[in-house]
Image (cartoon, rainbow, N blue to C red; front, top):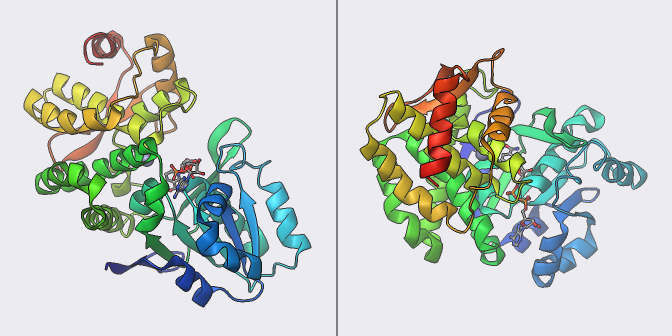
Length: 353
Ligand SMILES: NC(=O)c1ccc[n+]([C@@H]2O[C@H](COP(=O)([O-])OP(=O)(O)OC[C@H]3O[C@@H](n4cnc5c(N)ncnc54)[C@H](O)[C@@H]3O)[C@@H](O)[C@H]2O)c1
Ligand SMILES: [Zn+2]
């Protein structure tokens, strides 16, 4: 099994691959700690974790974007204060990215910071979001507006949770993980492309892909934890992806939107002569498997451009896109939202979907 430590300016933290969540939970929990757990996990895994939940304190939350908001976390904080949660106690998150963000944000602000642990239960959280320290919550309808950097102290990855995950969530995780492999280089990408189908059936292959994805991410966050420079390449596919997510009202899951976004970034990169068509098609062959069943051909170009222009990375009216000069050569580029760019987007939506 894979075990490693991530170096952080805030505090180093460990990542362990496990297959015995109840045992590990029992060993880690101390009196006064609180578990913050996705209600779906409570339902699906009551037989294995129910007796632990009954023995300790827990708060069940619904994994939705309203819960992950300034307003949504108030009852959780209220419950913690009213029930004797203190600075020396810890929070234990069990769930996907929503449960992670809720718990991390509360941990970062309560009593100027308390320790927390994370048991990620989605592929996206296991293969990506669990490391990297980012913690964001929504403010009303505005996504990820409040937050900071506050990693857990320990992360435990148990792939058994993935057995109950819906196919769309598995694909979303695989799409998100894919961008790390393209950033890492040609050898990594072709390994991912080759292992992709096997990983869906075979947990050992999947564990290997998750571990490598985290290893690639670790190598960047350890030099640029606060996303000032090197780490920004991981926004590859994300400017387009966020526009797709918001225009489809989150019908298209994050990692699937990012998969479309990577193909769009590659399309622009071909237009600019950065990569040959061949490279785009090598990548697209895999991306098409990920986005199958999720069409986005009803998006209107003008709305798409408007959503892109709101990206927080833009400088003034200029877009900042992460483009592709080849495997392992992903980089940030400035782009005018002019007629040329508009025509490329029209061509993409007309012919490429
Ligand atoms: N902090 C970060 O670095 C970071 C990075 C990426 C995404 N995010 C955030 O993460 C959120 C998305 O998280 P996510 O995609 O991991 O999922 P999620 O937490 O939104 O959960 C998705 C769905 O899967 C269910 N679920 C969770 N685990 C399950 C399991 N094992 N079996 C069956 N169902 C399960 C949940 O109840 C929910 O219905 C977004 O809000 C996004 O902004 C944060
Ligand atoms: Zn992402």
